Length: 465
Image (tube, rainbow, N blue to C red):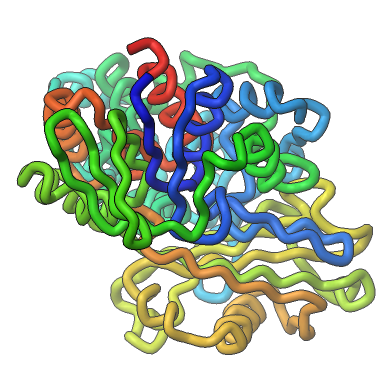
C-alpha cells in the first residue's frame, strides 16, 4: 500500500482522513496549527454556545447530515427556527425586512414584494416585467462554457437596484466579496439552470413549488466543533501531526517528498487540502500551470461574538429574526468603509440551545476589501467597533458578558468569472498527476457539506485505486 499524506487539517482534509481511517488505510495528516477543524470552532461558556466560524450548514445538501448520523450525532442535530426566519437589510440606520417568500433575490410571492418599502417602483416594475420576458431571457441564457458576473446576471433579470440592494449583501455574507466579480455559474448554478429551462427565474421557482418542511439550516446543539472532535477521535493518534507546517513539496519519480518542520518524508499519494494561496506556493514548483490556475483572490473575515446575560439582555430591543445584512455603498466615505460591517446574526433567535433563557447572543461579521486593515486591530478595538456599529442600529448595548474575536485571514476564496473553466483546466492538470488530489473551499463549494463531500470522495477514489 502506498504511503498517503494529507496536507491541511481543516474540514476537507479532516474528512479525507476520517474516510481513510474508515477504509483502514494508513495516512499521515500534517496540520500547521495546533488544532484540527480549520475555521470550525465552538466556544462553550456560561451556558452560551458560540460559533467562532460557520454556525450551520445548508440542510438541503446531504453530506454533513450523513456524516453527523455516522458519528452518532443524529440527536444532536437541530434545525433553524424558521418560523422566525426574517432577514433585514440596513438602509441608513433603519432595518427593513426582506419580503417573505424570497429565494435569495427571486420572489415566490407577489404581494410581499409589491408592498415592500425596500424597493422603488422601478424595482417592482422590474420584477413584474421579468416573468413576462421569459422567452427573451431563455433565448439569451448562458450557453455552455459562457459565464458572467452575478451582478450582470441579476441585472439582466431584475435591474441594477435588485443587484445592489439584495444580491450584493446576500453574497457578501457568504463570500465576503463583490457581485461584480463573482461568477454566476460557480456561485448560483441553480439559477443559471432555471434561466436555461424557463427564462424567467420567477416562473421557474413558481413551477418548482418546493414543499419540504425541513429547516433551511442545520447545526448541532453543542456546536459544530463536536463534529470535528468526533471525527478526530476516530483517527489513529500517530497519524496526526499537529504544528507541522509543510514548507515545500517536490517530486522524485513517482514519489512526493514533503519537508515539514525541517524533516523530509516520502509518500506515494498526496492530498493537498490547504487554502489556494498555500497550495499555489507548494505546487508551483511541480508544474508552472499551478501558479496561474491557483492564483485566486481571497478575502479575510473577522467574527466578533457578543453575549449578554439575561438581566442586561432584558433591556435590549432586538427585532424578531435571524439578523441583518449591510449593503456596501461605494459612495460611503472612506472612514466608514474602514469599519466595514457585512452582517449581524441574532444567534439566540436563529437556533435554540445557543444562550441561556432570556440571554442574547449576537455575532458581527466584518470582511471585504477593508478586512486587512481591521485584522491589525486589537481584540479590544474590534469589540468596541462592533458595539458601536451594532448600537447605531439596535440601540444602546451594554458591556457584554462575553466577547470573543476570531480572525480568519484569506479564508473566503473568490469564485471570479471564469472560475469553472479554470477548475476544468486544473482538473486536466491534476489528471496528469493521478497521485495528487486537491480539495478545499477554493474549488467546488465553500459550505460545510461541500467540504465534507470533497474530502470523503478523494479518500474513496484513493481506496478504489
